[in-house]
Image (cartoon, rainbow, N blue to C red):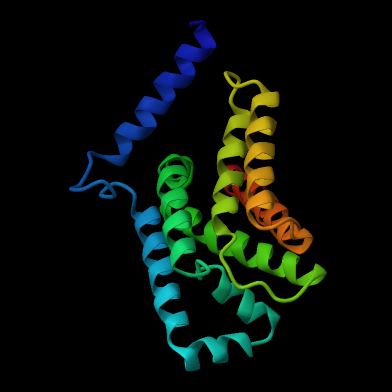
Length: 193
């Protein structure tokens, strides 16, 4: 391991040590991930109530997009997105402050819903996990130990997988790309502050 790599990992250990020990349970030291998962569960419960979901669908675009950033798109979406948030979120949350992490999730999800709505009907399912992917890929791009083509391959694979699983929906793909780019931009902005 060269000197740059040792310095990088020493700095990462110091940063993680400042966060403190694990405080009970698998999400004890991940307050942002816990909040995001709780918001997704609340979003799922809200959409189970027909009158609430109809009221949300009748909102103008900015409000609808913000609310859709926490709606997982049904029970299967809650399970899959929840698992993705848990796995990717554990990594992404250590790169930002918890409030920045939650804000990145919500705003990138809203921007993804807005992007999808520009090219097709309003889309009501969270795109926030792709914003978390933007956080991770920004960190991968800035890490001298990771080849940049690996970061792009990682992102390309996950976007292609989501595109195929979505049934080749172009508006959905553009929404996913929008959420991903919003996550990258927000992470870059938070990294500078």
